Image (tube, one colour):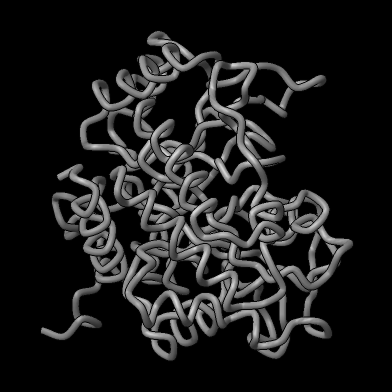
Length: 359
């Protein structure tokens, strides 16, 4: 029986289908204590969520309010509760780049960090190693095992959100590669996966995908792929986050997160990336304003995204896990996707979890 003959009806889906779907979901949750964790898993106990992303500020409120992080001890307790109540070992992620993108702030009792841009100005691998080890140690002590860092975007356009927040280390891909390689190794030494972002390169963009559709067709060049190429060739990178940028030269129709041409064909086949692909937040306006949830999920799975990272912090939907789960089941029933796609993603996710001792 060939794969296409394995047309799945609701009655013929594999018995572990909920786990296959759940492993592909990373989501933000409300709260900061045991009760919040209990409430989340009570609501979602059937769905076997594979990952949680944490924030220090809840930006769904006006003004922003405190969110998942209050102190080192509180955060450590919180991640312990997450792992305790989960039916499977969780990937627990955070954006801890340093500098302005910094969830573990000094006001919560964490060490001071400096920006990726400043490390580029210093351009001393020993200093990058020192800073990366400090961040990785803090994450490890608090039970966080995924850091959405380093930024691999080249420092090309000084007016975009990457450069304005001092998130790009250099316009020279060799410098980006060397410092990223150092940072990734330091994280892995502390059993933390460092996720390179934002593929295929956001350094030349002139907009913000949080807020709108961003077209880089006239500014992007393939030099923005070079940090990724170098890291992949050196077998230094296990996970990559996509961008929601549109580039008609790479895909005439879809932005990167939804593009089979960019993820499956370019990143996996041409560049030979074997690791886990994680989406940037699908609730960002760049794609959520143009596609409904079902279309977003269908396109991400078809493109080769392994983990959907719904931050739930631009808009909050308490039922987002349930909705994603039901959408995937409907896509399977309608034969728009195949279980083999989920199985391949799960193989990569399990390998990633094993790499840091979760399995």
